[in-house]
Length: 254
Image (cartoon, rainbow, N blue to C red):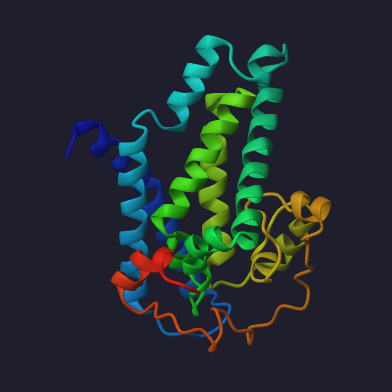
């Protein structure tokens, strides 16, 4: 394995390991609902995540940060061409990247082809920290490439990419964790996606809830209870029990 790829994987995996540890600890201390820990699900999610890292690093070893540096060095993108304080560019960059993720999520729910990549995530009938990493590598590559275009077009600064990456990791784990949300944090749904909002089959945001409100995909999470069910329903003919089934899923008919 090339040294650069190994280094990138280590840099990506240690914060993920920390987030998973915290998420699992919260699930143990304050579970949202009682459910058995399926170690096979966790193993599948870990393999899918590592595969996605390997594939995206082979596609573009520079990563998003490298693309941002190239754009900055050449003066590409709206933010690089507009005189503004650095902190404003960072805030705008984080918002733009989150909007791009919302748009990708919306497309994957409305395009039959893209849905084949995304339905793996929704096939999970048990929601916990592992679900935050249960994405098909093809979906990860799709979002990765879309964000490259956004970074080049908007001139998103490197600092914004770093802040966005941290926030995405934190929110993904928080939103999927099988843990109760303290009441003091539930009011944050006015600005960001909380677990109750994410558990609804409608809200498509990752960090900020404003995109769902603006584009009409917002569903209130006030009526969420621990009896709700997840997954694709019993009417489907697809099997998601084996790693092979997960990997070939985009090639299978609905």
